[in-house]
Image 1 (tube, helix red, strand yellow):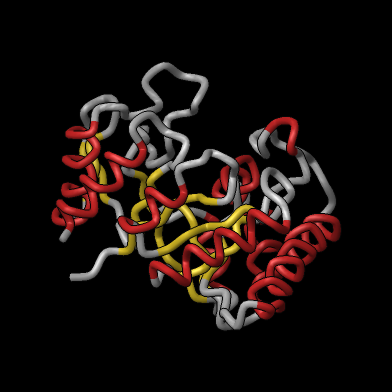
Image 2 (cartoon, one colour; image 1 turned 30 degrees about the vertical axis):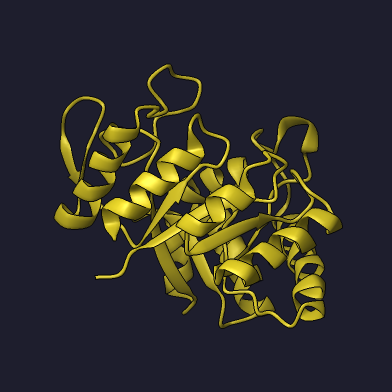
Length: 236
């Protein structure tokens, strides 16, 4: 069994180089919620050095809120928003003789796509029409995954090492006090349960099914480097 470990990178947190040895996929900020051309180049360079798959991490154009505020934009504008970031990112990967492996929307865009089939469909179309070989990362069994599969785009179901789950399979909102798992051992236990059992225990104690094809670790979490190493070692 092989399990992918991914992390959002190039967001100015400062620990990308320390986390990189423990992951297999990086989602690199495309400059709209964080980062710029220089951070993208640097992070792509780290991926090359550590043989980590390179992914684009597009978001709403909203640096002041780190892309975590929901926005209502038209389907055409959403399509353009995704495509513009992919073209910008591809210019740099081409320059460095690398290929983009996957796309993972960021923040509010990620959450809205998971819950809204229309938004999910637009994002999937934008990715597929940009490059049909790309893989879309999305929340386990969400509209993001279903709409992408419906148009023949490759997908990877994502679960989270450091976030708690609600009974309906959604992540506990960050606005709630129990949204984050900050204890390293609890995170590792959750990851191993998701991989080995195909389930996760929700905040209410209910056990629900998940497809854990890639595990996300947040680079901005407390003890993110130690957590990445612990999960990497436990899976290995």
